[in-house]
Length: 146
Image (tube, rainbow, N blue to C red):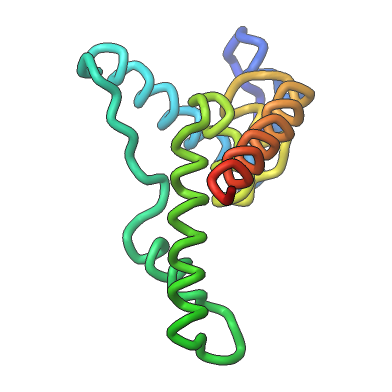
C-alpha cells in the first residue's frame, strides 16, 4: 500500500481507502467540487442561476421513459414528461447542500462514504442531509400536486 505524505486528516490511508476505483472517483469529484466552489466564490453574479445537473441526453431519456419494456403511449409520455419537470423543479428549489448530496446519491449512484469524502462532512451528516432532501422534494411535489 502506498504511503500518503500529506498531514491533513483527509489524507489518512484509513479514511482515503487508497487504491480503489471508488477512492479515485471520490478524490476527483472532491477536486472538481472544491474548484467549482472557489470559481463560484470569485465569479458568482449577484443573482444565482441554477443549472441542470443532468446533460440534455439524460433529461430526454428520463422524459421518454427509457428502460420500459413497452413503448409508452402518447398520454403516458406526456405524464412522464410533466412529472420529470416537477421533480427537476423540486430539486432546483432545494438548498445547495441538500441538492448536492441528493444528486451524488441518486444520479451519480455514490455510496455514503464516497459522498462524505467529496462533501467533506461526516457520514451521519450525509445521511441526515439525504433524508431531509428527500422529505423536502416530496413535500414540494405534494404541494405542487394539490
